[in-house]
Length: 428
Image 1 (cartoon, one colour):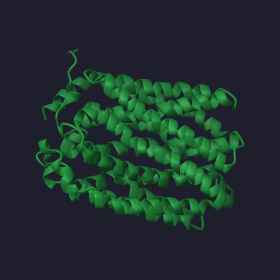
Image 2 (cartoon, one colour):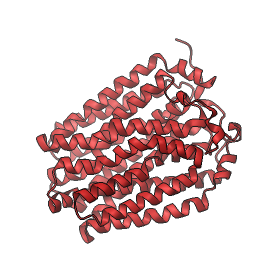
Image 3 (tube, rainbow, N blue to C red):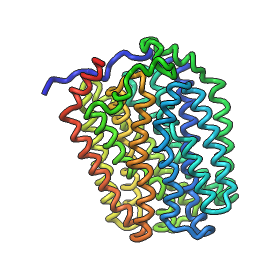
Image 4 (cartoon, rainbow, N blue to C red):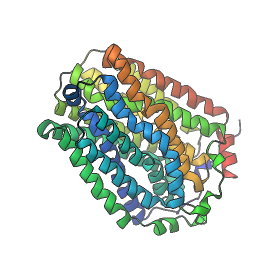
């Protein structure tokens, strides 16, 4: 095998982050938090909806999973449109749409109306993650990609923390409709503010070495879209990330219900404890991304080893937790599994970014989002709910480590081609 090469240290984008770069990051991060608060608030009120509307776990899983289904189906076409139409205005429009859909959920009178509202939330959120991260990485140096990808996407986990914690607390005191209402209004406010403070032209000017090809310039699409799946390594990165997201999607959705049923916690208490576990997940996403940048700075293939370690660590922690009775030890191991379960986000995002041309990064992250949702985030909650109907939530959680093991094997398969594919991508 050839010696180590420093592909990850390229010079696309600005030489360093500026104050405006961090403003863009903060506002984009805030909208992503709103995105996931709108997605996660439903899961905090599962026990209330189950009783009020007499729903099965399968139906509850569908209400949660339909968001990821819509994201998976629409993320690529909407991200491609955003690359051409303008990313900033697209992000603002998405935020307004998912917020209005959340308000629609607040007035739903039954399962059917809630399902429609949740589907519309998914339409609004479809391209936010991919387009938002493309905006963020365009205003920072390339050397920070894994850290930024992990930190930005951790906004989704922190949004889940707030969605579960705040949603459960509001629902316990004012009813579940008030929880949806509060989160929908907050999202609308952020959606209106975003285009007033983040300007398309200024972002485009911050990446002079791209020749103006990025951030919504139609000329940027001169890079062939076949580059999205051209290399063996990038295809395996999509697949491995999606398989790990099966567990990363199922656990946050069902943790409040697991705590309600297995520990006897009330809705607000279950939401608060689940929020702490989700905080561990968001923290782990950031820390694992930072470790990836540091350890793989001069040895890019080490991202593969780290991704594998995160997958195996998740599987081992969760399997051991489910072998223990309810108690502190079990919660600690679930917390460790949550810390690691989304750790592949940073390495996978950085690998995809480095294996595809900058001009189509919006579409590349859309493809990664497509894989994450259709392979993992959509079926994870739905399949777990179906299994829970038959085996209970604890039984369903015992099966989740299998997807993590499959993800580890997929990342391992990248070793044979990763360095060669990086060299080819650099010469594109």
